[in-house]
Length: 304
Image (cartoon, rainbow, N blue to C red; front, side, top):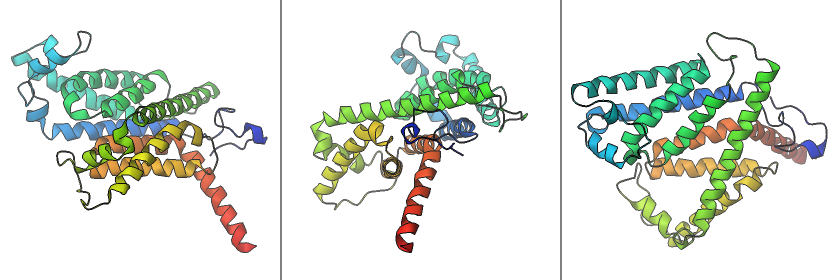
């Protein structure tokens, strides 16, 4: 679990790499990203003929025309009879690399292969990804750069001191990325009157094309106003509140709740699931630490 920090001034997220770090934490991150990527891709395989096939709902020629010149696309490699061979080959490589990545076999090599296949498919599936592709590509890219360890891998090997240090740096990198992402999202929303007056939230939650579970339609307009302002505050203050012990547990529970609402009531299940997974895996040692501290304080209060 997280190491004890000897001096109060060192009890800070970035003052010591050991602070808030748990054993195997970056390996859990690797497994979570691999498992999510398989789950998300399987959702598209269910509608293979519609979403992935060369002559599906959006033809390969259309997605090729909408892609930048430097973006990979199967249409550039072959058409006609070879299109299906290329497609099935890419699907096999993507799923096999993700399974190998989750099992911990040649993790950085498998992460690079999965990252390349993901970029290939994201060009085809971009109209249906709703922003989750950005986060997924960044997290896979991190796994290409940083070693995720061998303790939970097949075959299993012991960590070295250098590998442990690299994993701690990797976790800090993901944490910084989340801070920047949430702050930039909140900064963008605070400049949008439609977020502060609840209009954007109302339109998003009431759009039948996105709904997974229908939200009650008789909610007072103040609910949308307060919820919109709360989302803006949570995202804008994320980089600040995450540093404050005992406050961050409420921040992270709010973030998890926000993404659960997005997944359930807006139908963006992959987006909400991925952000919940990453926030839990990246911050869970500090969540447990704060929870134990709050529980001790409550127990002492009742005993006195």
